[in-house]
Length: 232
Image (tube, rainbow, N blue to C red):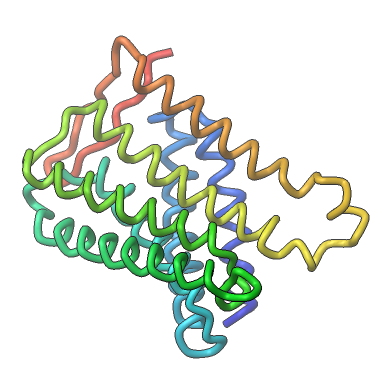
């Protein structure tokens, strides 16, 4: 299970990097995005199983569940309109709300611990996961009440959710597993660079979408919608 988790995680990082760099809506972005989504679903699924049963760790369980939720809702944002999958989205909203509440409560418990951590996960990580889950669930509720989202908001929803999933995976690999790297590499600070690169790239594309004057809408098939591409 561990080797499967590592293999799918590495595949997700490679495919996610290509999807982040590629022009949004381009063939390269769509192909690498599909690989990224599938690899992330497999990776987070194995992480949840290990954290719940094989190597119990509540912090990893929260992180894996949140990442799985972000990928699922990120894909649905551009693959399906709201109404046909309304029940599924409502269920995922409740998952996010639960993750948010648990993350915040665990963060407060971790603060009271002598080492400021639970299962070796520091309090700030629990607060971060709790905040993302809580905010995401509120945005889900807003979307469900509206019943639909304009193209720009759907693309924004897709980008920040997939980008955050990529950020969590990158942080977990390079910083969460820093003790697996040589001491010289850890001391150099180079392990933080991939996390910074993902952050800046995600913010760049979000800014492009938010401030874009036009979006080039591609024809949709009868069964599913295709993400619009940013006009160069």
